[in-house]
Image 1 (cartoon, rainbow, N blue to C red):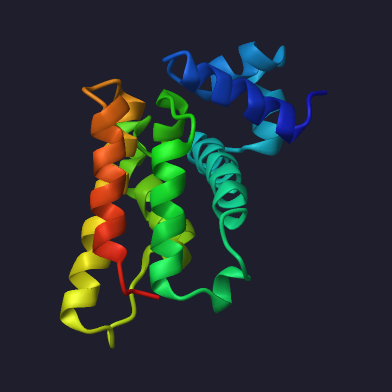
Image 2 (cartoon, rainbow, N blue to C red; image 1 turned 60 degrees about the vertical axis):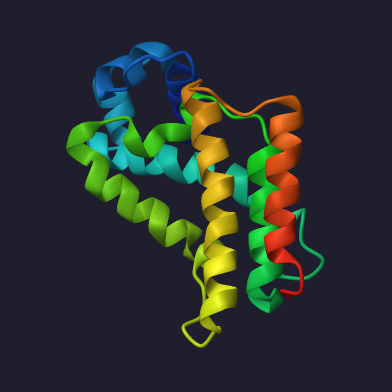
Length: 176
């Protein structure tokens, strides 16, 4: 029987190829029966949440490699700087948009994405308004670039990407 990891790898490959993931399609991809997949993932929601976690696990490894200390000890500016660098430098494809893969599960998957990314992106309430706005602007530049890349919808390239990075780093100037 295929392991959970093999089932998830196959399902991520399907997403990256633009295919729809279901319990049946994940079973076919893994060479299993639907009950074989359901042994590990009893519902489509369980499968999709596990897929999202699999994708975010990779993101978190990449993000953590950009920090100079543990995440919990990293100031908001450094977290957002790492997020910006990751979003502008990482390889992105449709598989990274797993939270949007099934319209019926979008609320659950987006909720899980928020939960997983909160430690990276949430800003403390006590930050001064100007600093908070600049950090939010950098985050939105990062996400806008990342989404454009994942959707293949006019992503900034070359000098435009470099200028966006410079603008975002300018916004981070003086923020720890």
